[in-house]
Amino acid sequence: MSDALILVALLLVAATATAAVAQRDPARQALVLSVLGVFLAVLFTVLQAPDVGLSQLAVGAALTPLLIMLSVRKIRRRRRRDRDGAR
Image (cartoon, rainbow, N blue to C red; front, side):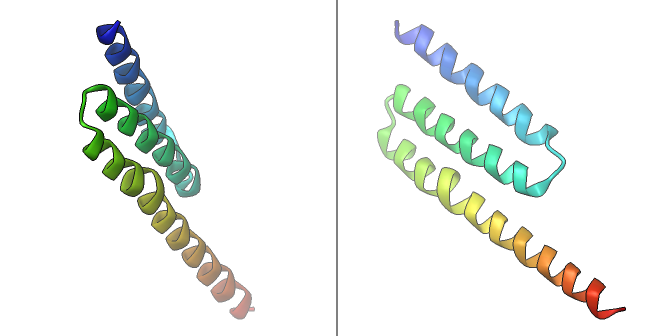
């Protein structure tokens, strides 16, 4: 049972990581990266490392995607403001 659970978790991590790389839009990449962080946290928990899983959940699933989304938003606003100001 444990081996099957580890295999499923590994497959989910591999599929989500591939989806994150395949995305072209940075905002979508951040969302997929958040899901990847959750799946990695599950994998670490299944591998009996709950402390690493909790850290991954906080940093990989919440903080990093949030920072990416805020950066993308700021860049898009700045581009829109520069484009509208050039007219």
